[in-house]
Image (tube, rainbow, N blue to C red; front, side):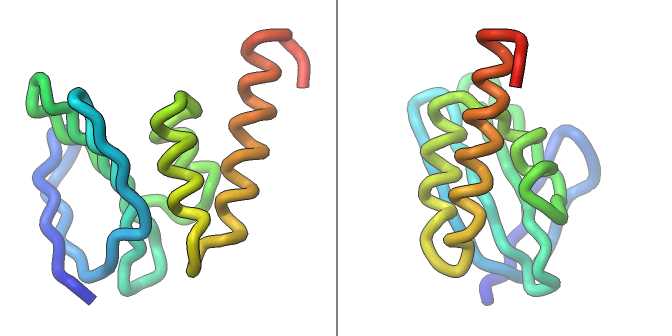
Length: 109
């Protein structure tokens, strides 16, 4: 396992041992999910335009979706997270986002 340090704007610096589970980038943002040695998730969003760094520690898929949301880039991240060891999570992420999108556009789940 590799040691990571995330300097974030929404709290104290995070230092942990773990691995990158999934990462997606475009010209505006980089989204990353880490799996820590303690089997928790660290979610990190880096905004390249203003160098804003936000990160949270999550225990489940709901907290991860609450942090990243369900836009196209987040869905790409969730699909990448579906590779082992988190194959079960990709399905949960996708279903949660699909349900959220259906509610957002129609007002009903």
